Image (cartoon, rainbow, N blue to C red; front, side, top):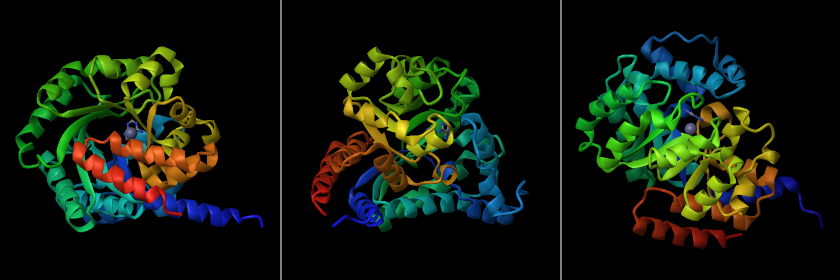
Length: 349
Ligand code: ADE
Ligand code: ZN
């Protein structure tokens, strides 16, 4: 008897949901759903250039990374108080938990907020309270990756680091790493060599966006000039076969975000995304949601859309989930425990 494709999809979604997964590429400001944007705008007396929630969603037609960033930074303008940052992170963590995320490594952009006069302490305190609550009530662990905006100067990044460092002890359980995001073109990794050297010396874990819109040379620069352990996106790496061979040999994780790549026109069709080819070539590919409120899907939607468009089988999907745990900054013992849980979960129908 032929099977019903809708039932197959529902079964696959249920199976994927039950796999313990880590989300490694997620901008907390990119989880601001239009409903919350309006709620916070009203709470804080901020005027929005949209009539209603529907108008916001209609405005999310992006032509490239910059066209998205313009709206994303404007949207973040409603985040003002500790409570706002708490509510934003709490909503994301609840949503991620429902998708089977057991560990999240969350990027945040302090410069977006300090430039508007919001104290960096407010940002840390609000996010941290939600992260600790999720750990205690949902069993979902998470860490914070302070991300520098690459369209700004390295001096600005160094100043931001100095503002944040007095808070390090207070948030030692959470703030474990740094990242580099925002407009990639024209802002090569080498621009941030000094701030990354300082962060490495301080013992932070290092990651950076590279090879999203920027060329493979930026992935090379992130590895060699910044010393990163992970590459955020990295999908253009296969334009340089020697680089790809090195990523595979060194098992450097790529935090790929398929629905983001589609929305920002890095790819024109998901069926032509190279993540399956990269995975089958032996690259350490992980799936993530990037800015789910803007790109129309959280992590489970990214797994489902990729599975469907690229014919990923269950072994490959389990490998992607396993890669996410392996590529996380969790201690080895935690990784081993979660990988055991994953091995159990994959055998469920
Ligand atoms: N900031 C938020 N999302 C981003 C992305 N996909 N690339 C670069 N910077 C970002
Ligand atoms: Zn990103």
